[in-house]
Image 1 (cartoon, rainbow, N blue to C red):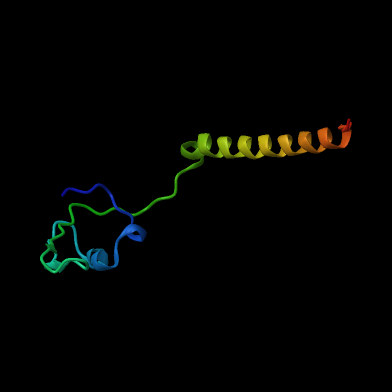
Image 2: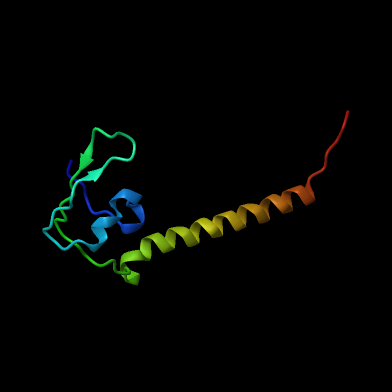
Length: 91
């Protein structure tokens, strides 16, 4: 099974050994934790360091979060005003 890029936080305990492997190496057989009939072999195709995204790459995400927070604040303010001005009449 071919996997895409995997973050080290997402590795299961039995696969943490790949963190110390070099690019192009194949692991020793890794027994499956659930089934004794299965072993895994892992080949490290490539490694890359995680980098922080620059502002231009995150702008849309940040803008969306800020707008979402602003909409929430405005809707809560509006709800408060409407409740203060509301009149309930019982018949």
